Image 1: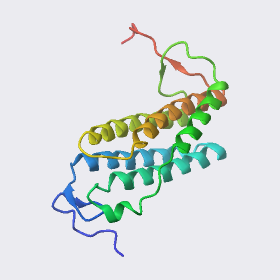
Image 2: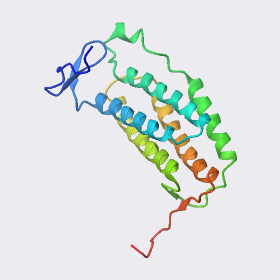
Image 3: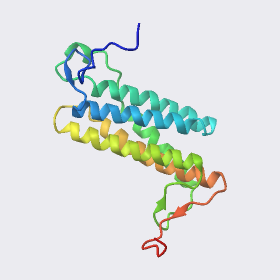
Image 4: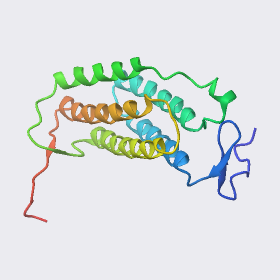
Length: 186
């Protein structure tokens, strides 16, 4: 099977179930942002510990699951029957991982600038893209029905990526970069 179909050359694409929409449709903005997030996670994974890489790969698969939900309109009843399940346990596991990471981090005394080391910077980029994806999904929510766990999952994922970026700095023996309000050197 060829990767190109030429069916999108006029600026439209197909959803699960057969509907066609423009490539600027909010649904495509949402799962396109998830795709970008997934690519940034892949970039971070290559620098992560084996344990964190394993979990982030699970997150990548979960993002594909979420993308399949977002690509399936409510009118596609047959396609909806084969969607992968989204379960609260995934959010609970992520919350536990956040709590475990936070237990080993110093308390935050001020805002932290993205960076500190290469892995932390990659995780911060992924976090920012995750927040954009969440905003796109929230925008879509007001136009169509969707699974109720998608937004909480993305919200928690951005928290996880923030805490993981802090851990990446601390575990490497590097220093977090504090925000200095009204920096006089600018």
